[in-house]
Amino acid sequence: MTTLLAHMRVRPGREEDWEALMRFMTLETFRKEGGVIRYEFWKGEAERTYYGLLAFKDKQAYYEHQVSETFRQADFSLLLEELRVEYVGPVEGAGGGLPPTRDPPLPEDADESLREVQELYPIRIPDWWEGRL
Image (cartoon, rainbow, N blue to C red; front, side, top):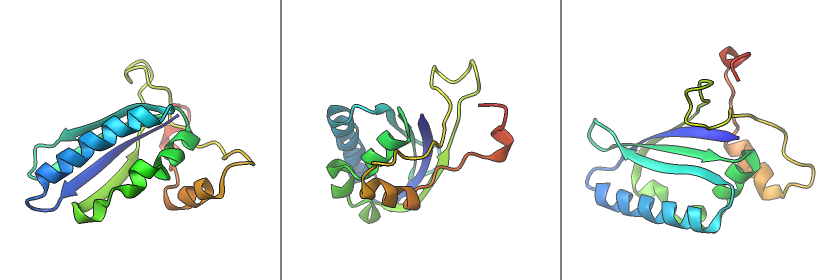
């Protein structure tokens, strides 16, 4: 499985547009993609900050989301000032039922677009997680 926490800051005055886009993205993602488990967005305490908790059944489902028509048609650069993606893994017995984040190789027959996305969004599993998956 692949789970990530997106840290986002939107451009000044674009909060309503951002929230509308996140509502659209959430509806379309769940409607069109079978590999999504969690796709949630939250307002933060600091002005213009948002967080996204996204969980996919595996790395391939995550990368398929990244190349989906829904994801590609959204122009995030118009709305986002900052974006940082952090891969997260559940603490055993305290992770809301989500399995560990893993980084298996893509299948040999994986589409070239998925391989390109893997280059852009490599999954990083920290060394200190070793033995805690």
